[in-house]
Image (cartoon, rainbow, N blue to C red):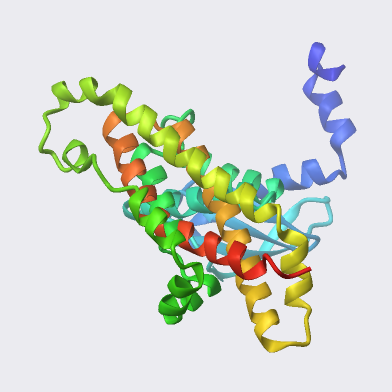
Length: 305
């Protein structure tokens, strides 16, 4: 391979003569020489993209320009005109918000099985992250879980507008759900009430309770998956009541699948005891509505199909 041996400059020039590699090298040199004219000050210029008769160049200041070039009789590019070029960039002051936004997109893409989009977004932010081993902080992961449980979706809207009817439909089972209702219990770990040096004593309790709520959401997921065929048939029914129930159930199934996955992923990626306690509380507060909804779906569909 050429990389394994020394190639004399004259020979390298000969084999690259007329190539795009040589054109790009010459054009970069020409753009730097013309930087005073293009950007108003002499500076080092980098080529962003090169085309048959124009290129986009970037100055050290962050300013960009589109330059048009022609080839001289000697086969070298000459810049004949230029104009400002605008593209979206991230200021240092906005970098944290940008990384947080892209991190959420990465998690959502992975949850949706879109690995290509996840990798693409990861590549965008890696240069901006000082410690590449931890792109998403514990606080970011907790926020992702909060955002998921707080997001609007069809089944939640239907639940809120028909809560009385749903409670009535499940009858005495509502009392059992109320009795087993999970509650937030670790607020003092993450609101500053308990000093950092004392938090380690709660690790075992937080771990067991967090795993319990994670597994509870996975059980909800399994219960709905067992009825998927019924949901699909109901959603295609010509009867409005059945079609509405099927749509409610399918939307719930999709949401609880994502909830179970995002909660499991977050619990696996957070080791700070306060953050794990907060994860538990966020999921526990959301759990009741899911418990009621899945029991309603089971009751309403038991005579279907």
